[in-house]
Length: 324
Image: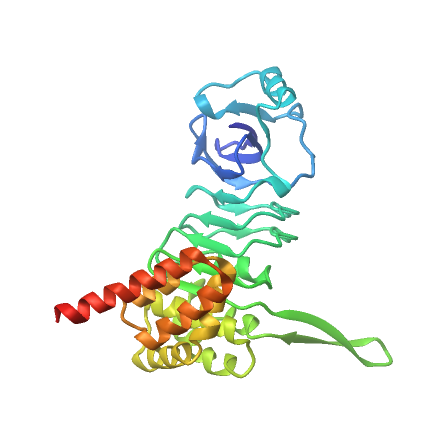
């Protein structure tokens, strides 16, 4: 990979652009020995605002981060098609370094195929509209424990789409929500209306730390307002990673999930993701009647991988019963 960047007086790096040949991008901790602390505005957007020749802009190649390379080498590789700008609709996954402190305005603007971002532990400052038009972005991984302060609340308040968040020791699903203004008077007075429990879930923070108890309490209200597929996702992630999960909340989640196994299985099929179903099966949550429902759904969807996994689970359960 190649980098366009600037350094401040303290020797810290603001990253302007990255060039490479893979849509899965890992941003290093440092360039030429200097820590990367900021992603500049439009860093991963296709908006081309840097030519690499402005005052103070430097160029470095990732193969040798202690060596500053000539710009004509970068231009030759771009012209030959060996590398390209890692931005916009091309990128699908991004891993950010622990050294990062700020994500600039419109940093990921129009990254329509970006699906997941991994972020380090320290609290981040998030610029305005940093994730605008990231239509497929559904997963954030925070490489820290859930008890720590993070920039998660700033991220979530910029995104009203359904989002999964993974900590090192927990996971949470935030449903989508919508906002719209209604005219309530002739003098152009408008009232903000918010629909969806996703907004309420995004308020479960205190001093930058996520509060699981508040989130679990909100599930009762969500059951009256959210579709079953969303509620199954909320319940399944909390049961899979039950950090700070009280006994009464665990029971509530289990009752809901076991009474909506069909919808849960349909959601697994839709996402082509068996990890939650497999993990909860290993915890002994489901009985044979639940697996029969899943088997029927897998066969209807003609999903061979899912059918095979259900058969393996049923065989394992039968072997455990026989051994007893």
